[in-house]
Length: 416
Image (cartoon, rainbow, N blue to C red; front, side, top):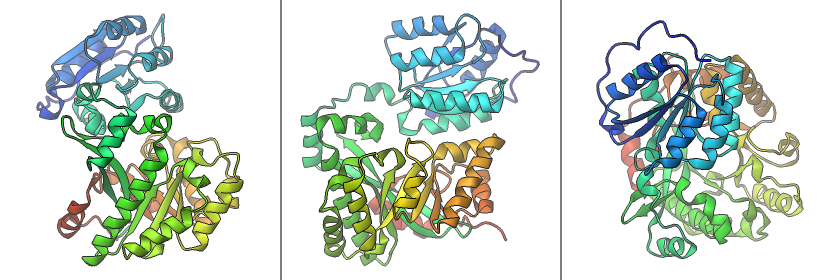
């Protein structure tokens, strides 16, 4: 049953042109709640809004829709089909929709629902208490980024093995770079290389459009090698311009079985004049497989040669803390879901603080991902986190844009 609303949303909001093309579905069994939620979205400039009084109606609307829904606002406590069951079925219909949970449920329950939804491949934008406010909704809609209204166009993108190989040959696949800055000074320390597809018909496409298809096409190692070559070449150009910073590249799990990987990375660094200690390879926790003999060999030799190694998205995979003890990682990346959730959820904050303390005791640098607000920045600075990245610092950008950004950006230093 829905929560009782005792007040209308806050003061009127100005329409935002970024949201005009969005399609929104509001799922709540309380008609008054739905009406007030629709008012908030209309005030922000959203024109296409549909309402469903429950999960079954929502699924029916989505199944009959000619165009996919961009954003789904879903209550949790509903009769007949509750929000958890509704999200389970939504995953099979439209996994690309951004999900906003609107509920007064306990924070730990909401946190669990968010993690469950992510495990099912849904895009969680976040949770908001009722009544929704324009400020709260705007902050979550901003997380759609390139996956917002362009999502309908992206559904028409041809993603085949042959098309992706052609994109590589045509130079359409690019590396973009997200700055990593030090806490509390805000000094630029490095970047993470992130893949983008500059499509001639659809513009710049994020990796969500094609990345999960690479393994099935047998192209994961091809793209990994391309990103290594591109990122180290760019790092060499920056160094020639006087900007000597670290560059991090995500490593596919299968690359850990490539015995010549240390020599390949060393050769690229030498060819482009990049100091080897400026190279970081990021391995996701879930990429640390049970058959670890060859990965242990490769990772150990990389470390011996001076390459920095980062364990990415720690706490979201299925490996154990034992990997931190057994392998020579030098950097520990906090998953963005922990960073975003710690401000609202004391239990998440406790886990975050414990992970930071553990990494520090293991003599590892700690990087916080997904920093979107000053509150995120200040919280991580207080915990002793070393580096942060996220939209509060800067969005990913083409390599040519980094130096002008660095020369003109405002100071982010924490006040002493």
